[in-house]
Amino acid sequence: MKTIGIVAHSAEGAALCFLTACHEGAARLGAHMHPTLVMSAVPMGLSMDGWESGDHAAVAAFLAQGVNIVAHAGADFYVCPDNTAHIVLEQIAAQLPIPGLHIADVVCREIVANQWTHAGLLGTRWTMTGPVYAQALTRVGLESSVPEPSVQEKLHDAIFEELCRGVFREETTRLFLDAIDDLAAKGADCIILGCTEIPLIITAANSPLPVLDSTRLLAKRAVLTAISDQPLPITVGWLPAALS
Image (cartoon, rainbow, N blue to C red; front, side):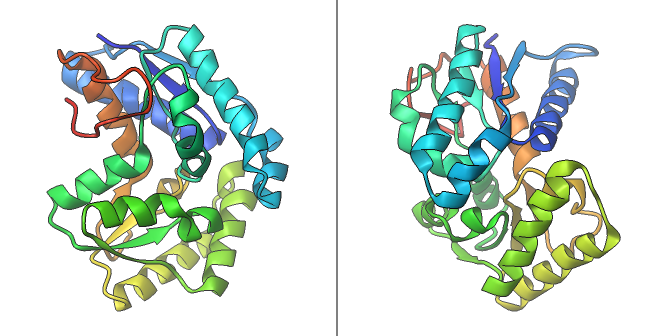
């Protein structure tokens, strides 16, 4: 069985990923069982100036540090339960010591499996306007929509000022639900929760559209990859999301 490395960027998302992997392991392997997990947690605060200024090289240094920590601890591959971080991880994946499982590839695999065709994307401003999901969705022939710029700013601020700090307010949940309604009006038939904290307030139970919980999907796919009898097909770069 392979060892999973969880590379934390935000604490809330990483904690959800860890617990989901443990629970998925138990569901597949039996009570109290799961693949071995190792985790790094370089403080996200060290990267915030780089994100705000667009200095991706500064962010890359901290993300690479996190991957190196789990690699040295014995991880065979890593997951980073942070969608925005993949903007930078895509730039340095070939330089990292172990391969990764790409969160957007995992999410797109699920969309295709459910035969949805038009994804609405919620996340940080950088995720909603950045290349990670735009390219991943295009590769599999899917349409996508994002909220209007003014709504993007409100969602972005709520993520960092509230959700990443473990603050959950009813009016913030309403803000996200209204954004989903707007995306549905644009033709979206599913919603990517493209920030690993959004599932803490938006779920299938309260969303008017089917949701893709990127954190939990990534953790579950990591478990399938870890327990698979198939060897990892590569030693650097991105693993195929369909490996199981």
